[in-house]
Amino acid sequence: MSLRDLQAMFAEALVRPQPIATNPEWSSRGDREFTGSARLSPIEQLDVYREQFWLRHVHCLEEDFPVLHALVGAEKFEAIVADYLAAHPPKHFQLRHLGDALADFLASRDDALLADLARVEWAYIDAFDAADAPPLDPTAVAAIPEDAWPKAILDLHPSLQRLRLVYSAHKMRAAWWDDKERRPIERAPRAPSCVVVYRHKFLLYTEEMEPLAFDMLDRLARGETLGAAGDALGAEVEEKIGAWFTRWAGLGWISGVRVSDDAGGS
Amino acid sequence: MNFRARHGIRDLGVGVGFRPKHARDVIDRGGSPDVEWFEIVSENYMVPGGRPMDDLAKLHERYTVIPHGVCLSIGAVEKLDDDYLARLGKLVRALDAPYFTDHLCFCKASGLDLHDLLPIPYTKEALEHVAARIRYVQNAIERPFAIENVSSYLSYRSSQMPEWEFLAELAERADCGILFDVNNVYVSAFNHGFDAETYVDAIPAERVVQIHLAGHTDKGSYLLDTHSDHVKDDVWALYERAMRRTGAVSTLVEWDEKIPAWDVLAKEASLARAHRDAATGGPR
Image (cartoon, rainbow over all chains, first blue to last red; front, top):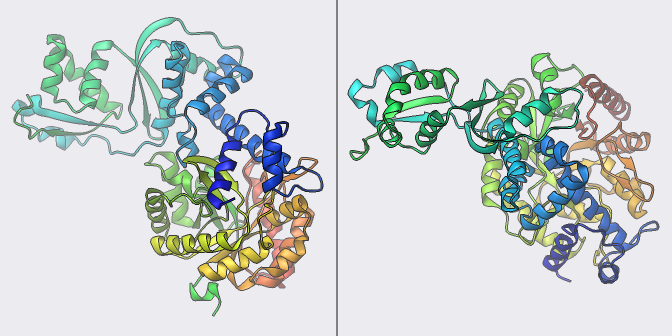
C-alpha cells in the first residue's frame, strides 16, 4: 500500500464514531498493514487512535460550548458532535476553529434555541482572540468637519460580535457562568434579542441593545456611512446617533473614524 | 562541526511548556528561578490578537521562547500548507527563536486535519519524502528545524528499519536537529516491545538540540502519552542516559492535562535540573 493510501485508510478509520475492532472488514485490513503487539491486535492498535480522535474533538467542543453541553447533557452532546463532525469534518489545522459551523449546523436541524446558544458561546471564542485595535482617538473625531459626518465611516473593534437571537440565549449563558453550584440549566424563553459580545482590556462582555441601535451598528459594521445607515433607518436615528456614538466609543467599540472618499456615499 | 555549534544553538537550561493557566504566575508574579525558558505550542499563537498574543509578547520580553508545533504534518503526503508556513515563519521571526520544532508524524490525510501525531512507516520511501519536506520547511522559515520522535501505538508491517535508525538517517539527510523526547521513547518501547536504551544509544547525540520530558498514563494494555502526570522514574533514568551522551542540552518539562499549580510544575523543572546535573557532572 502506498504512503498516500495508508494515510487515507488511517483518516477513514479515525472519523468512524464506532469502535472498529469488532468489524471483520477492518480487522482484515488492519492485519494486512499493522503488526499488532503482545497485548493488542493490529486493529485494536488502530482503535487507540480512533478513540483519541473522538475524545479530543468532543472535549474541544465541550470546552468551547460548556453551556450547550450542560443544557443537553453529555450523551446528547456527544451525539450532536458525532453528527456535526460527519457533516463538517475537521479541515483547519487549529482546533480553535472546530466549532466554526456548529451554530449553523444546529440551525439547519431546526433547533433554534441550541443554535442561538451555540452562536452566543462561539461569539465569545471569536471575541477572545480577535485582532487588537486602539481606542478611538479624540483628535480624529475633532478633525472631521461637521458637514462631512454623513460621509463618515466607523472602524469598529475587531472583537465586536453582533448577534440577532430568537431566544435570549445570552441570559442562559450568563446564568450558567454565574451559578457556582452548576445547577440544572433552565431553557431560555423565546424572546428576540439583539446582542453584542465584545472584548475590552482582555475581558469579554455581553450587551443587549435596542433593535434600532443594533440595526445602526450592524449597518456601520458592514461599511455603510453614517448618512446612508441613518437614511435607511429613519428620522429617529438622527435624534439618537450622538448619544449612541458617545456610548459606543466609551465601551471601546469604535476604534477609528474616517470620511469616505466615495462621492456616491451620502 | 556538530549541528548545534554550526547554528549557534546554545543550552538554554531547563524550561517548561507555557500554558495559559500559568500566565499570571509567570508574567505577573515573576515565575520561578527553576524555569529558565519556555516553549509554546506554535498554533495557539497563530491568532490575530487578544490575551494570548499579549501574554506571549510579555513572556518574550523576559525569556527565550521556542515555538513547538503540532500541525506541520511533515510526514503527510498532502502538500505542505503555505499559509501555515507563512504564519509559522512570522511567529518564529517575532520570537527571534534560535530554532523551531515539530513532530515526526502526519496530521493531515484525505483533506482532513486529524489533530493527532500519527505515525508513519519507517520505509526508504518515507525517509526520502520526509527529508525533502524538512529541507523545504527549513529553507522557507530560514531557521534550524528540529524534529521530535512521537509516542506511537501501532507499527507498520511495511517498516524497513527501526524508528531510531529512521530518525538518525532522517536528521542526517535533511540536515536538521532532533528534539529528543525520552518519555516518547519509553512509551513506544513499552507499546512495541523494543529496548528503550538501544534507542537512546543510537541517537546522533550531536544533532540533539533539546530534550522533552513528560508523564504518561498506563492504560493496561498500552501506555498513553498524556502529559498528565509527573515524570516517571524510568524516564528520569533514560533522561540521564541521554544527557550523558548529548552533554548539557536544553531540557523541557511538558504538562498538558490535569495541569498542576505553577509551583508543582516549577518543582518538576527543579527535579529535571537535579537529574541533568547528575548526568553531566554539575550545573552549567
